[in-house]
Length: 113
Length: 112
Image (tube, rainbow over all chains, first blue to last red; front, side, top):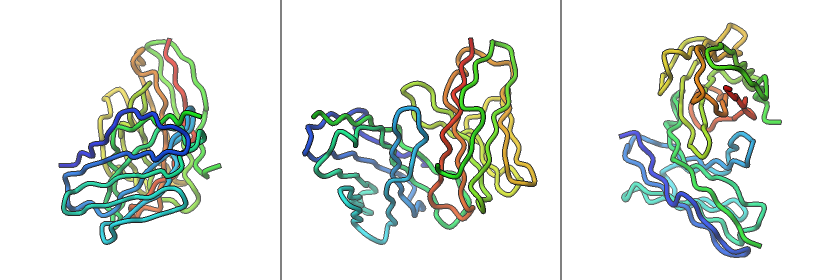
């Protein structure tokens, strides 16, 4: 009930291409869906987040698409750059309470020059 | 600098030993979370404290314990260390009303 399933495990994209990472959740009580970006040897950093009352949120080259009925959401990275190479984690939580975030298993993204 | 401070950054110790990892949350944050990340693994939730009290427990071994002090800093104690405990240990903090975390840069523990 509290799992967040993430795919693919790894992804290689050519520079300038679109990177797409998908996640699915089970618990309909989740109301906050953040994405984290982690570079090697560093802590994860909040990249972008969405709430279920909107279907899409865009910040620069990063877009979250959210499908509430399917309980799925995805991260799209447009015009992918080598500097985007990192591990990406989707997550879900309850924004209104002091509660832990449930993380997906992570996607290792490599952008080829 | 995220505002969450973890010390030490690196720690090398022998099997059977005990270590203490320290975390100072971002100013104003009441919640502290501890996560373990092994090589090529995801983020495994260990434990959460909110304003000094344990709030949630994850896959934390009995050999591990944590606490949050009145000044809100937290310590994670790892005892009877095994080779398999080698990992990155992250602390994160939040205001306490849910939402996103801010992670520290982690402590890399190597057990030899």
